[in-house]
Image 1 (cartoon, rainbow, N blue to C red):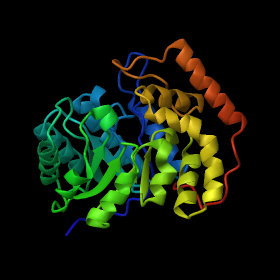
Image 2 (cartoon, helix red, strand yellow; image 1 turned 180 degrees about the vertical axis):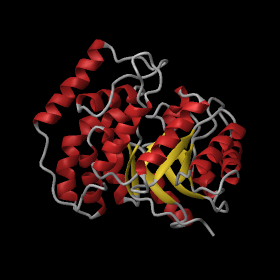
Image 3 (spheres, rainbow, N blue to C red; image 1 turned 45 degrees about the vertical axis):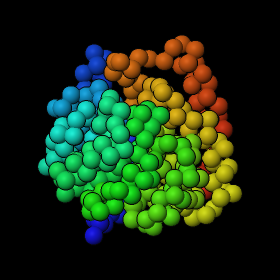
Image 4 (cartoon, rainbow, N blue to C red; image 1 turned 90 degrees about the horizontal axis):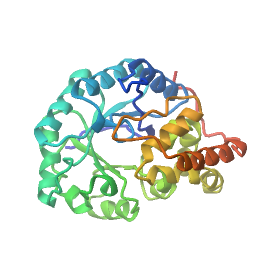
Length: 309
């Protein structure tokens, strides 16, 4: 029998903060995490793509996981991204997340290697066997090249710890395909910001969001409106949010999201190389987008959103 989880709502993919010399700034990262919880998000994803997992050392990843555990104090679930080159190393990091006491792991396909479908499945199965934590399978074929198709996920249905599927393919038909294949065996999460309302309509219980780092209350409100079927209100907020949500689908999403977060006074725009700052023209375009959004920032309808503090 599969493990039971209660993950739902908006889980921002938390940014990792750096000092001006690109050293890890753990206290600034702590502040970012606490600010999101104070604003009522439903959970945290640490060491994900937006958290620049692949630019962190092993010890830095552990430090980020430890501070997330400390900051959350049980107020919201914390899930750690696991993105490594080998199944063995990914398994090791999953074990560290379990040792620290996190609530789950979000596992990416093995990086760099373009695997065959049965190899992709074997990687997830191998990591899941290494930990008793609930496992979220993360599919992001535009970025990581390996596509975790519904057929691959179905082949993992016998693995009790694999309980959740985050899809960032942008193809919302996959939620319907999954339901037709295995019913509600897997909890479904939207993984791409600019298809979140569609994803919720098709059964997504949660949203791992990039832009909710800058606008956590707007993100949580949008999700709750869609979940409640309040589509007219959701559409109005979605229309306002969409130019910014599109930034989550760009190759330089981390730089864009961190810049928006910086403009909102929630964190630094610094990214660690090889991610370089946006060009002057690109930065100006994002700043113009943010200025327009802030000028027309809507009053949020009541969805029962309260501080989790």
